Length: 197
Image (cartoon, rainbow, N blue to C red; front, side, top):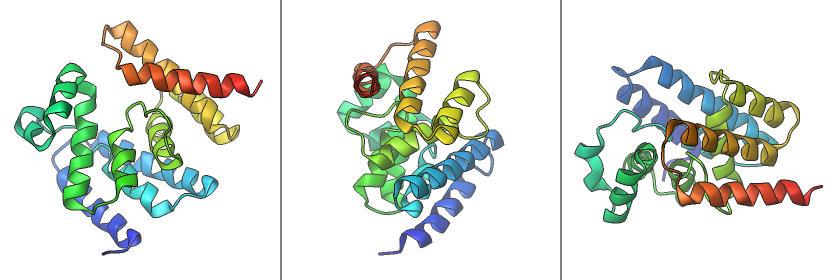
């Protein structure tokens, strides 16, 4: 098996090739997520290369056509993505990670669940999820506020909680359906924050 440092290089090559004719702003976002993920991995004692691989691959399928690729997913995942279209790129990106890079469940799950996390996330999953929301190219007020909480205040749980609230509010504002797991993860982090008081 290749080392994780070799796989970072491979993931970058795959990403650059896949995105050569696609949105350059998205590529900048992906590299911003990788930068934030590396910083947080150092801070929380997580393998930096694993964090970088997950970050580089998290939006790999952002612009892929779901109808052309949905057969790569299980029937259950296809049905879920049809109901919640914002998930398909995460599920497909995780599949391409397994097909093109290596078999590693930790990285796979960090990619698959990066949109709003899942209950009982491990630290790698939490890092990728919050890095996606707070990387330096995100200029929304909520993202900037959460980045300050995360980086300056060194409070990953509060940053995740605030990002989940912001994401839920955007979904409700835009009339998009809330995924049941969104509410579960939000409640979990609300309880974590409340228990500290």
